Image 1 (cartoon, helix red, strand yellow):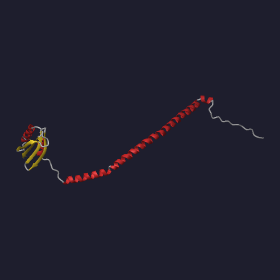
Image 2 (tube, rainbow, N blue to C red; image 1 turned 90 degrees about the vertical axis):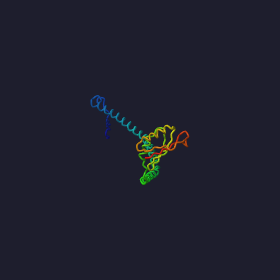
Image 3 (cartoon, one colour; image 1 turned 90 degrees about the horizontal axis):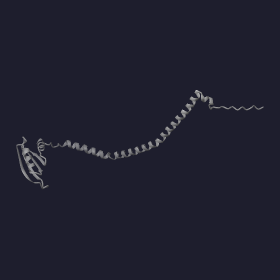
Image 4 (cartoon, one colour; image 1 turned 30 degrees about the vertical axis):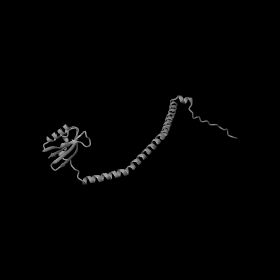
Length: 180
């Protein structure tokens, strides 16, 4: 004879009485808390996934900008090389040719220059200093000559020439010779 079938039923759901106990409430709280943690974690993962698109776009823009700037720098490499070569040649040339030094007399003359008097040239030869300049007023020229006469190392200050300036008729041109 056939054996009688027995239906076994397993119920994993807690019973009403189980939920009323301390262990039941703790299990229920843990399950609901873990559900919140899982939802929060999923939202965090989704935010990271979506922010990746924005970060990829920024990375792409920065790479393009970097490539453009690299090309600009590379294009100037030859110009910079030529410039540095020219600077090196000029420095060698400057060392080979002595530079004229401004004498102390010329510095002294410039320090006694009144406002309104402009110097065009200052030449120095043996024991003679010749100054050519322009001014808008004869009194300023006279003041300049008087200033030069007051300087001790200058023995003889002579105003050798005074006339209208050829370039600008409103100015007066003059030449002063100083014996040192």
